[in-house]
Length: 206
Image 1 (cartoon, rainbow, N blue to C red):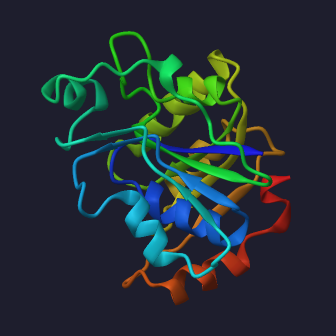
Image 2 (spheres, helix red, strand yellow):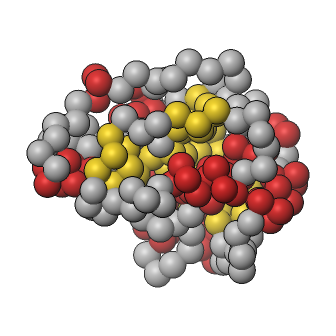
């Protein structure tokens, strides 16, 4: 199965959550587009944080130099990103695909990160982190997935709990949607990732 890890925005913990998912359930990891930090990519981070040795890591299709929206980073690098150029790696098992930014981050002048879900036939795992405005961003993200008939596999709350925010978001969700939590980590390490991964419900990715 294929799962697209996306978020309600930038810096909500997609890479951290991807590492936890790879440790718990994943057989392979792929970041199709990396924009910026080419010497310490999200793939490098996941490789450092995941202690499971059987995982396959696939190279990025596009490695862009500027930490910006992929469509703009590609323009700076004089590269054209086409959705049709992406061919999903074939994996026996679960492939964890990490998006860039939020669902509606553009990859070119007509496609968004959310289009990866349909193009790769992947279910979305939505990462939510609480901050001022996160309820709106969460509900808009969920509403967009529904409007495009994109399958939502699970919601992951990353970081500190906020009961008021979470209750508002949960009212919008199907009661059968798995809800899991990745707590705030003072230090990210293979040990802390493995500890969280062991606590994830086995039915999360069924």
